[in-house]
Structure formats: structure tokens, C-alpha cells
Image (cartoon, rainbow, N blue to C red):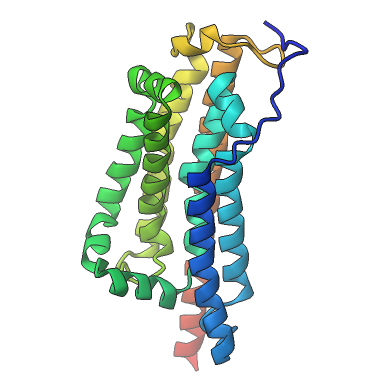
Length: 270
């Protein structure tokens, strides 16, 4: 059914747990950055680039969890829920890791004494399995609909996506230098393989001839989207933007690899 005039979709959810978590994350980061600034190490240990990536990453988490994206995805459209999942699992973790300088990540690992554990669980094979297991499991109809109906399960789902996202990006971004043996060519293959599970899942949604989630059959429709149109759009969002994220990442890895090889060649020639 088309959108009814009485439906207000401009709903922001300022959940205290979300706000406090993001404020704490930003606060710790800011404290570390300002400490370096006072020591005169700005531009050496931390740069404006780090600050920008981290800020955009935290903002992405905020928009995914507090903006109307969360409300519309939960109450009306599967496609908007898919946008939320991509922001939580693929976009925000990468941006935040890019914003964390090496000294800060190393300090966290040493302070919590978890460096060996993090190095183990972020091994490329384990990280790949963890991410795609979470991605597929949370889109199984029974678990997906349980998350929509139970706020606690929904929070757990979001935590799984965010955590799996950090695991998946960590071996490539490697903020603490724990995976220096991970060759750029292997990183490119690693990133390319991520498009397979998300592409298959996206295609399954895009070409399904019947609703996969009964939950969305009982909610008000928006923007004249039928349930099958919405489902196909959700599949397309996972398929195309999801692929694009990894292709951009592997292109950057390739470009940086070529640049290092060129610099090494010039240095050898000199």
C-alpha cells in the first residue's frame, strides 16, 4: 500500500546506550589526540587524515543507529534495513580503523593485553569466515525476523555486524602492524572474495519470486514500493554497493602496492 499521510518517518532514536557508547569512543580518541598535540607530535603520530576518517566513521555509526534509517528499516522497508547493515558492517568499521593511528591501536592492545588474541582472530581466513557467517546467519528468516521483533536481539545483531566488520577489515588496514606478512596481492584476492557471499545473498533477494520475510508483509509500505520491489531493491543494494566497496578497497591496495614497488625500484637504481 502507498504511504499514508499520517505516517511520520522522520523518527530519530537517541537511545542512551548508543549515545553513551559513541561519546565514550570519541572521548577516548580525542584524549589520545590532544595528548599528542600537547607533546608536539601532531602531524607525526597522528594527522588530520586520521581525525577525518575517525570522525566520519563515528558519524556513520550514529546515522545508521539513530537516524530514520533505523526506524524505516525496522518498521517499513527491508531495503533501508539493508542500507543500515552495509553501513554497520562494511563502511563504519573501515573508516574507524583508518582513523586509528598505529601508536593508539598498539596502546589499546598493550593496555588490555589482547594483542595475541586480536592477531589470531584477525587472521585473514578466520576474519573472512567470521564476517560471512555473521552476514548469512543474520539474514536467515527466523533470526532476521526475531531481531525485528525483539529489541535485545536487534542490538545483538547490530553488535555482530559491527564486530564482524572490524574483523574483516583489520587484516588489510592493519592499524597495529600485526599482519605485515599479508602480501598486497593476497590482500587483493582476500577483498575480491568478499564479493562472492554478499553477491550470492544479494542475488537471492533480488530475484526471489516470493517474500522471504513475512514480517514485511504486515507493515505499512512506503513510496509505493511493493514487498517484492522492496526485496529486489534490498538485494540490489547488497549486490552493487556491497561489491563497489570491496572493489574500491582492492583498487587502493593495488595502487599503493604499485607505488611502493616503484619507489623501491627507484631506490635500488640509485
